[in-house]
Image (cartoon, rainbow, N blue to C red):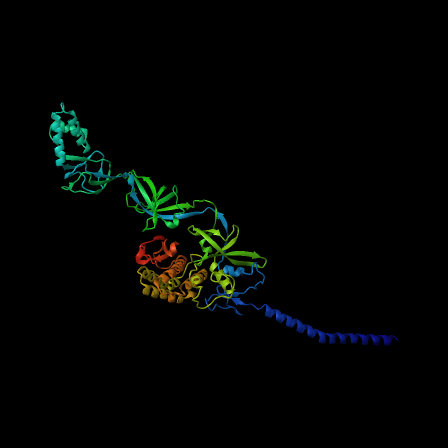
Length: 593
């Protein structure tokens, strides 16, 4: 019985072992295959895609260089389907860092603007005096023989011979003989001489000596400096004819030119800090006491007057003066202001990118805004933004490029949709041409990189000179040369931060140049030149090329009185937007060394 139980137990154990082995062979392999297939699928799903931070349309399965710009490709982070707004474009932290996106929370502040003014020292018009001759006669002697000489009130400044005056004195002497019987006649003869500015002392001298004064002295009516001598020795002058122009320089006026665009900021009572080139190391200050109510029709400026005591004669008429006014609008209410770098301007619209955050990350949505006055490096926002919203102030062009590629609303395509590529001569021309670089960031360049952009500036300056000379043919040739020079710049020479800045600025300039060959008249070229100049100014300020000096010049009447800038190698104004019709209209805003 025991032997049977033992045999049965062995048989059962053997059956169990065999069953386990068969189960593993049947089911274990199947599970392993399932696990392997799932693992392979997961591996395929998590395969890294590589892209370019500046050209997000690039997609590669392995690392390498961007075929467009040569930058190192970066891993494409998984995109979230959820966004704060379906019209917003999302950006990963890595993409934002590489595109150098910076943001700022919009707030209200005082609307002040630092305005640069130029002007001259002039005589106080109230202290100008014309010294005239009181009688007709021939100049016998001039005691003041040159301009700039100082005269004192009551001093003899000239002597003249007057037959009429001699006759009047003889009549006085004859009337003196019958003064007791004809006192009225005697007094009338004396009054006649007084009208010719003879003093009582001179009349008494004639009566005492009994002889007429033949060489009549002319006395100075006021004290001051002779600014103009109008007669010479031996000249015959009539009664009332001017002899000298005399100015009292103990007080002077400093007259500043105020352009139309700044008239809303300059007010009577504003304080002005100013310097004079011929008096280095000294800063003067004063208060605007008067502003011309009429704008000059030729120069398009009004004069703002600052009065100054000048007892030490330090300030001399015609000295050039440079001043600064920290001005505010007449309302003086806090307003929303944003940096210029945040605004992308198409000519008809101004847009900014507003940042939104959610659990899925960061996104940006385009917002159209209405611009108010320009405040140097910022704009007043009239509408479109609220205090507390966060906007992009740097890297906005990169955000806009990403929005275009993603089919989201962008500066060039406000309605969104498929990104536009290729050549377009239709309605998007102005938008493409009129964009502005979004930021100015000073960046160091290698010597070879700086040399590579020198042809850009050479072609640009030729372009500007041709427009100022009203030469359409040469202007168009120079514009095409500029476009070619831009295409030939070796972007691989731009390393590190400089590469991202160059990609942004060159793309903006390329957009401004894309229709240059189709322009058919000089007016169209000048319109394009506004936006080309914006791009070249941004490149010059960002990279400071080996071309020195470079001046940023401004015409307030260009661009339909909105004002426009350009670059010049000379301080002398040669306006490319008006040519010979208003060749010298403009001012120097800044020098790039």
